[in-house]
Image (tube, rainbow, N blue to C red; front, side):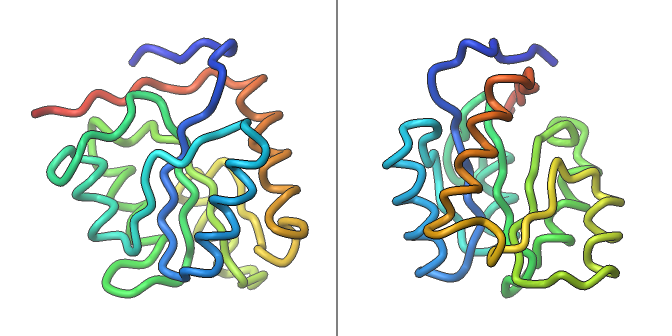
Amino acid sequence: MRRASRSQATLDIILVEDDDADAKAVHRALEKSQVAKPAARLTDGVEALAYLRGETGTPPSHYVLLVDLNMPRMNGLELLAEIRRDSRLHGAVAFLLTTSADFGDIAAADEQNVAGYIVKENAGTGFADLVGTLDHYRRLVELPRIEVRH
């Protein structure tokens, strides 16, 4: 797995979020900051898994996932479990976004090796703090290159 250079100008974000208002707020914050660009927005884990596997589109080779915890069909933890079992996707960097501060949810997310567990109400007005965190992250971390089979 090759890594992305830290000098990468912007960060590709794949947002997996079923709530339209939250998705719009994240998109606005990303576009305003010019730190990251939304590569795709998917509304549940089933849709996200198909996209990440290249079945319904072509994901970027380097990306960060922002995954909502509570979604229909396949929730965020189920999606992350599937990603970790997939030999091509298992190294994907994922942050979990949620309204839940429940210790059980946090522990379950940690078991899926999330890069961060972010409670939406702590993400700052209009997700500004989240974008700041992503900016620091992209400057410091070498992202894995995820190969998609066609």
